[in-house]
Length: 448
Image (cartoon, rainbow, N blue to C red; front, side, top):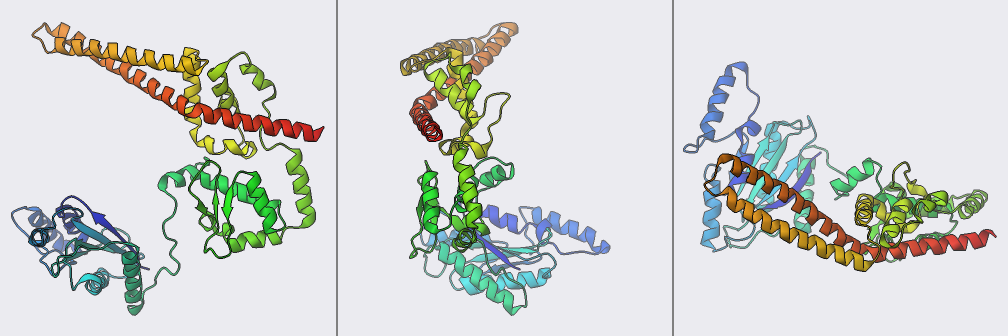
């Protein structure tokens, strides 16, 4: 099963060439009698004044030993020395599926078929990992016509299709249904740790909506109640939803196999009407958020921005001795779960300086800037003292004072940044709390 990738290289072409031609990665298995000779070969190849042809390394339209210079010569010839210096393609095989010789032969064949008529390349097959894999470094400028290598989706598609065809010819397996690019590593780790992301929050909203629906129209209505926009046009290839507060839509099939158009339709039509009625009854009798009850009394003595942010942290369930259940949060708060730490820090700063109004916040920011300026001047004077010809003890004291002032300035700068974030988000916090209060008042009226 061959896996392929391709990406651009900026800087100098020598780095990828040196990496893929590393003898530690391209060496084959040696007998005990050959190990000493192998060590001599590696040491000889590492000498900058010498070269040696490496195992499983092939130059196409160039010499492996002088590939970097020949790449540069081509660029100079056509006066195209800027931008990407090379492109790096990759072909990897399943463990134990191919021998290094076969993998290298396939890699060379792949490079020649795709770009051998126009570009200089170095192909090197690495055997140092559990998966035998080949690297292809491609010059960014064609030696034949001076045109730049064009890397786009079609380039990768052609690379993958050609690799699959060659693998079939050699009786090897291929990836039948490549998934393409998944979520970022950051989102993956957040979801694995159980933290909310817009993706798992979207899955929850879809699951709740599906459970309460018998038709697609009811499903759409439930999504709208949760603040989601959607595009379920039959003429479109993919269904998309846009979470509240976001501009970028999510293709729902990317959320998993249970969230494709066909799976959602099947899940909706398989709902039992009697079970669905009970779910509706339970769902709308229990508020979809946590009632603060007596905990709200703990912040009623506060006022202004201080009270605003403390309550918001309570709503998010972030204050000590209590953790909010994400499934019971009001819909407008779910996206802000990712910013709990920031809201908590902002609330602490407001309490520290007892900031009530926007004017107080602006005044605090002015004081912080003034304090930073005074400390900066004081630090500059101490730095001058540390450069004078004075006793060592005085110089040491001056340097220690500089470090202390630097730490204090850094803290003030961070607090100033937090104040700026409060200015930007305070309207958003007020709006969300207003929505929560309106929904709670409506639910109280419905229960009467």
